[in-house]
Image (cartoon, rainbow, N blue to C red; front, side):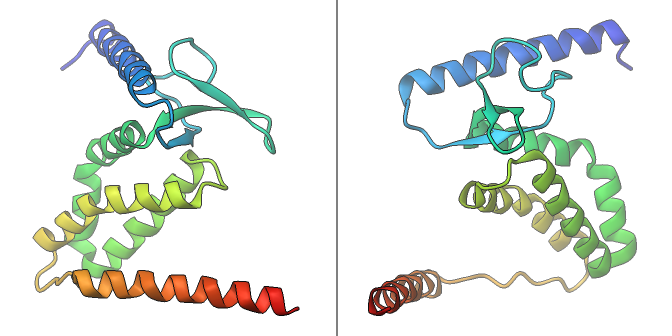
Length: 175
């Protein structure tokens, strides 16, 4: 079992590693897509400690970390793994109903951590993190089947999105 001083040392190492990682990513690719992450990291609220980039969210006037999607993904996966025992127990004991509750709760967590107005980034982080939930559901729910999407289905959906956008543009111009 970790003592409080060991835990603080681990948080400090993690903080410094994240700061170096984000600094390097920003230098290598300054145009990399970023997400505003409003939760504490290593016990530090956004803006409470120097090291990670912070922005003020205009409509809430609160600070949020400005992180690469990969860094945010890692932090979110860490949250899932920290609670894996409870999540897995919920899936095991309640099956599909439990899995649905857990996914709703995960969405609420993402809504509270990721600043509103970044729907594309939030959707991407949802996709990246729920693969872990899906793996646990496959493992723990008897007869669970994932509905895989083929490449053709995926690209056809994208084409229809383009067609919808084009139609919307034509309708808008007609007005």
